[in-house]
Structure formats: structure tokens, C-alpha cells
Image 1: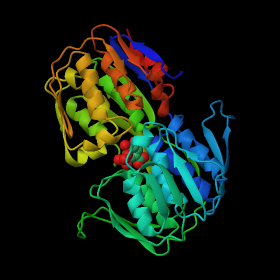
Image 2: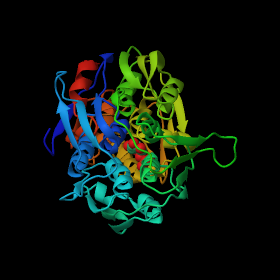
Image 3: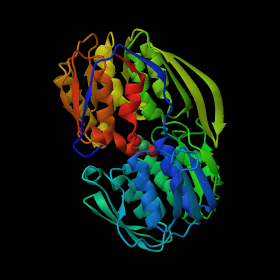
Length: 441
Ligand code: S3P
């Protein structure tokens, strides 16, 4: 889809079928980065098809890492990476992170430990996003970082890093991974404490590539969310199949939740417990979910889901749940008017500094569809039992907003037009055709 593309979504009668998701975005980014600084080759099957993860691969190439897409399996989502070990090559041009906050934040932890200066740039949306959260701790480790008032572009001059003992003020898995990656290059043991336990793909991926990490379990004082990594560890390449992206699956699960007669199967889906809170919330709302074929692949839990729709009741999302569901809240909010008693979201201020201000974007689009919404600084309160009508909506250049409102449109009266629908390709290029395959009209 070209820039400025619009998509029309018609109401549906039901959702049925099977959806196999491209590889998880969070894991794909981390594997691509670690494969680049590992020794030996890595083979990453079912790598995310999203533009964000392509940005990470592009940056790794600029840093001297060779990789190629192998299309022997028919799809070209297997990536073969030739790891070059911890020393990367000075990039000739700025590292283009595109729309991807994950690329900029996590990769900054790796380039901070190099013997050269890197310039990191992003698109208009990324250029508005806060980077202080990585600048401050990486500077404390010894890197020199210039920014535009705490926002991109970043100019990072690498150094012989020193380990730090750091308590993160914001719960962010990107920051945690950034600092764990930097910790690999640091002299001594880096200790990171997070206010809430965020997704642990950085820790799991580092272990898969052969690093040792210590995690303090709760009950030993502090928040119990502490992880430590010793510098100087060498990584070795892996062969992995990346599990289906749970945050992309969220759109289809929420679509199924809208129709009491729906039936959907999602094979080989990521089930990591630090990511799977969505399944609890959907179950609480009324969706019937069963999981089979659970297995662990390189430390990540994977399973197949079968879901059946029923009546949707109500949910309140607060505290640690808001952090755990941060990428799924837009679509949960988009289906909230169709629940019986509504959905309330609190403690989700971080949504305002994502690819768009997602609290404002959700409130604007729901209102355009005729919904009543209470917008708050840190969340939304959306009453249930509402009837929505089709409308002309905007994605605000944000992939999750484009997809969330394609789902809301399935139960609206009349057609919905979504402008800027091409932004879905940031995480899931095949989203709209795949949605068509499972909707019945
Ligand atoms: C991600 C962490 C979250 C999430 C983002 C991916 C990750 O961001 O919103 O889509 O892969 O670590 P924060 O770290 O900013 O919370």
C-alpha cells in the first residue's frame, strides 16, 4: 500500500477460520541485533514481516553485518545472518530507524559500546518520541550522546563502558534490553531494576544466544524485578523459528470477541507469560480460549489457540496490567463500546508517547463513530452497550490505530473508511487481506 492509502471496512456477520501470524516483532528485533554481534551464523525463520524489523536489519547492515533473506521456503521471511562478533563497523551514513522506537532504543545500547560514532535518525513520529530514558543511563555508563532536547536524532559516541546499577524510572522493556545489551560491552556487572516486570524477551534472547544472566526472584527484597549481566560475554549464533506475534494476533482475537458465534484458530503463537495478559483479559470479558501444543522454543513459550466468541462483559485495566497490555490497549478500547458494561483503562500514560498519542487517537476515532468516551490524562473510560456507525477515520500514522479501528468497524452500522491504512505495514503488512479471509459478511 502506498502512503496516503485508505481502506474501506464493511460490517461483518461473523469471524471464522485460522490465522498464522508472522514472527513476533519484539523477538525479531532482538534476535536480529544479537545475531549481528554473535559469533557464527544465525538462521531466523518466521522473522517479522513488518517495516520496523526491516529497519533493524537495515541498521545492522549499515553496521557491517551481512545477512540475506532466504526464500527457499517460498516465503522470504527466513533471515540468515553472519554474526561478526562484538565489534561492528563504523556506519558510512546515519542509521535509519524509520518508525521504530525499538530499533533506536535497543540498538543504542549496542552502538554505545563501539569504538566509533553513530548517528541515529527516525521518521517524523519517531523524532517526537522520548529518548532521555536511554540517554541518561547510557551516558552514566560512559557513552557520549547528543540529542535534540532528549529526542532523535541521536549522535552516540561509543566508549569503553562501565557497568551500572540502575533503577529504571519508567517501566520499559526497550530500555531494559538496551541496558542489558550495553551491559554485555561493559566492564563489570550491570544491575537493572524495573518498577514493574516488563516483557522479558531481551533476557530470554540473550540466554538463547549463550549469555548468562541472573534474575532476583521476588521475596528477596526490592521490587523483585532485578536482572544482572556481566560484561565481556561472547554470544554464539542460533537457529530459531520465531513464534507468531501476539500483539498482531490481538486484532483477530478482538474481532472474534465481537461475534458470539465466532471460531478462530491461531497456531504457533507466542505465549510468553510477560506478554500473554491479553488472554486473561479476553477470557474475563467472555471469550472462550483454549491452548494446545504448548512448547518452549529457545526459552519462549509457544502454543496454538482456539477461541470462540460469547457475550462480552466488562474489564478494568490498571497498574501492572496497563504496562503488560500497552500494545493491546488500542484494540481493547476500540471494542469496548460493544461490551455490556464497558472498559476502563487507567495508569496508561505511556500510550501518549507511542507512535501517536494513542489515548487521543482512540478517543477521536471512537467519537467519530458516535461513541461516548471519557478521555483522561492516563487512560480512557468507555461505556458499554453502545451502537457505533461507520465513519471516516484517520490512522494518525500509527499501525495499531489503523488496525484497531478496522476491528471496531466490523460491528458498526455502515462502512468505515480508514485513512493512512498503509501504516499497518509497520508491524503487519498482510493485515487487511488476512482480516478479509476470516470475516463473513
Ligand atoms: C517493546 C516494548 C514496549 C512496546 C513496544 C515493544 C519491546 O515499549 O510498546 O511496542 O519490544 O520491548 P516500551 O519499552 O516503550 O514500553
